[in-house]
Image 1 (cartoon, rainbow, N blue to C red):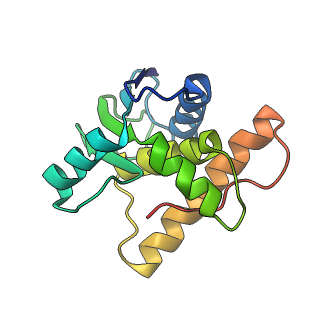
Image 2: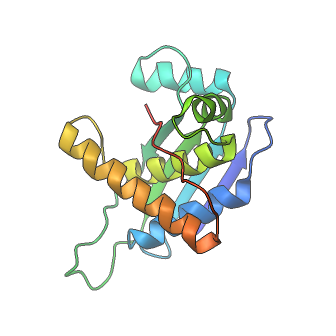
Length: 165
């Protein structure tokens, strides 16, 4: 996987963890190993501008995804997953920090950014949470990926509960 993480936010974040969990999520979803992903970390002002421009909604949000080649996880029958450009995930650590503190299972900004990275990957792969059944599928998959990554890393304690809006 070619994954670039660019922190333009001015906030110190665990870029390696973002890279690692993105790679884990893409591997778990059986995305071609030569596919490309970009993760950009921005401040609240930049995120608010994107949120207004693309969603016509006020204020900054936690994560936005901008798909490119609209890759999807291969079906079990596929021999070779498709290769391409997944797109961009944009994260906002200021919103992530607030959400981590407000969550039922309070957690750090970096833990929230890890959750949001997986959430963004799933959006790039066509998952959504508008309808209750879609939400159940996406958030279940998100939790399984985050839990699997945390277990592989030997991280203890409860994994972050979904706080994505």
